[in-house]
Length: 160
Image (cartoon, rainbow, N blue to C red):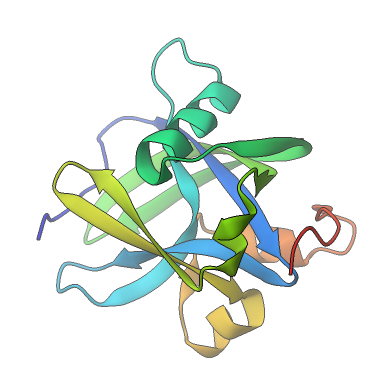
């Protein structure tokens, strides 16, 4: 198992908010012992000179082998956090999206390639289920942002 630590510089990421009814597609985040401590939307780092929308498409092609349709509504969050005593700092573009291949909505669990030697697991989970399991939603503050009635507007029901 690879032990991950945050970069010592600010990273810029793009993540997709993909909904199925009230469930959001989220990837498991593990601590050093392999225990799931939280979940986050799928996406990844933006490369230098790459527009964030292009980065999000690239990440889904690389990790899942599929395309997504990005919707117009997006927002940006700053996330300063501690991970095993190391401070991380990221700027995250979060964009509502949906799969162009509807078969992903019929999968309970989606296994994807994080990099050459690591696989990730994503699941459909409601924010209430996440809270009931005692898991954090990353980036920090995202759960509150999604819960704001006047805040982030979710797209309508796309698939069941």
